Length: 396
Image 1 (cartoon, rainbow, N blue to C red):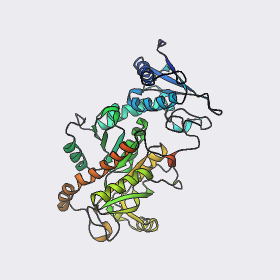
Image 2: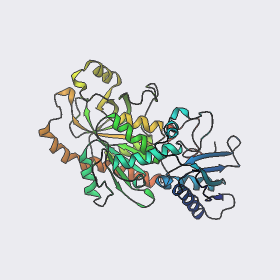
Image 3: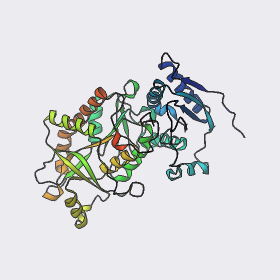
Image 4: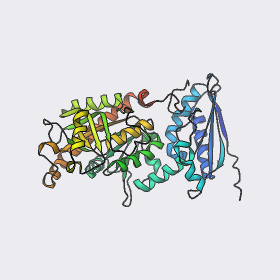
């Protein structure tokens, strides 16, 4: 049976508009209507000023989940004088369609052509569905700023601060909690649990929503003698022993946190009077690395690592891959090299004294981001030579 072609289309010419809000709203409402009709949509952008890529098109789906992002990008292009058209592309594929699975392969993308958006419609469709499954909350509830944790203690502190937060109504693998503000300007906290596989799963799908920031606020083992339990670690680099992204992001590619976001976190630490170290975080996929120490200890010493965990480098590497500004602020919960392992008798006291402090420092940094960079953080360090138009500079 052939799907009926919807007649829903919309267009706007930035060169002739007096105001942009209504035009942008009409464009994104049209995208949503095409979704509702069961079709993928096409966005066509014509930039008369570009001598290299004047006309770009891309296919989209589940656009309600990235409405805020689309509004920002489309408005910026219209203000620059672009002409934008939205129309139906093709019937959306069912999840059980064999061609849907094939379309998810990132290696199939033609790297020679300039893209409009980083992801195809099938990937958007899958990620929006998976986020609902894994986090227990709709993808549209995710806010511009996303925090990841590996402990429920941060969830407790989050809900103490915002008891009205959107939350799951049933048990899920990686529950998410959303302090919702207008235009998605709030904060989302996702408890990803332990390990790089979970960290990759979460960030693979969150990246499709195009958040402004991702910050890991988990626990770590402190590797330096003078560190104490409860001290903080602000990552300036990572040693990737997590292995889950090695095939798609080689280990010889440097991965660093966003400079501006790290600066805000550093200033928040100073203002809070917190004890902290900055340096390299060693991320491992072996929770019991202490049982086979030789290679791991040699790597830690060579890299001058100040902390060990199981998620931070994975989140940072996926942030780099998918162009999401990110940072890591960890709290020392044990000192495995100095006779101070994490013991159950100490854990509850440590959790109660650190959880609010840790969350508060991260939130203070995000408040600086909102105030000083309402349109998103500068992120040249994660941009590519073939950067998609959405999220990149408008003159390429």
